[in-house]
Image (tube, rainbow, N blue to C red; front, side, top):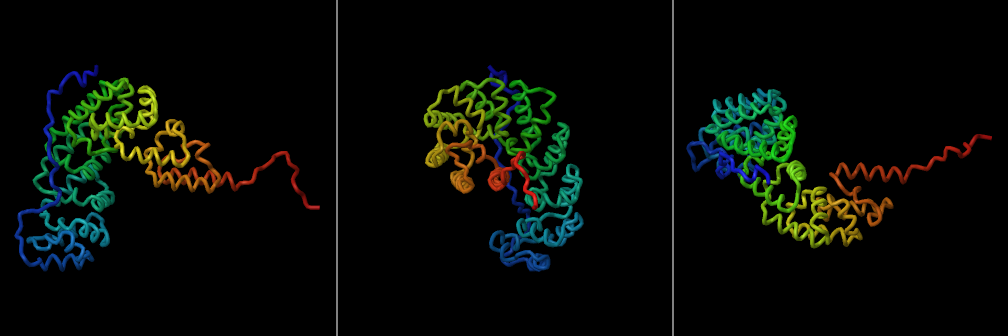
Length: 375
């Protein structure tokens, strides 16, 4: 039995609701729009009508610091169109006090010193940068904690950008979840020398894993162990699921596994092998799996083909049908060939499709055939 499961952690991670990202500082709310804000946004080529429609409340608040926000971004290398896009998406930024914005800039540059890269992050995640000043201490402490783990700065920056709630909350809560993940890795036989890389990869692929209660991870690992997965297989699943194991629960997995086994008509041992090839089967609901199984079977694909390449179930029925038709036009029959050619991203498929097309169009060269010569 896993010591991870048999023992309880000395620390407990309380369930914490997500902190609001929309910044609404204590400012005067007027029935009339703040004309200075409207004019400043207009001068910056921001779509005022869009702001009025989606976040009109911002235009009614005072004080606002539109010019200061624009100057900050401009000093960081942002162009006029980029500034307009940022303020169009997240006009709440103009309500940030300049002093607080400068603090944010210092915090973010401590993990992302390249100004061009930072501007690109702000453009994509403006709400993560223009956040409440009350979170600065937590942000600073969390940055220091993740740096103490020797995590790559790019990983820390990605965490701050895509899961800002994890940096806005007390550092102790992140410490509990990270310790739980590290303990699970050790208990499942992971090598200590590779743990930092493993943790970096997991956090990079699913930053929201930090926001989940540690108990969920323990319960799911216990359930999967009871289903017959070995310690090594559990580590493989934990890594393959990219932290999404924390999104699952025993009831949903039990239902999905029962459906899959009944549909495929296999033993529990055979089902475990299929799950190891395609861990996504653990978290797809029955309705989605039913649609995808039936879609493949109606296209003439056999169940043995599906179990040989179960990752094809990660694709929607629409994508599968589209790819099957593309392949059929090139003379490839998925009913007799491998389903591997269907797999992967759009880019992966186009590469495979291109190879098939090239193979069909390229004339066969016979090295012993006599060459034609002019008379």
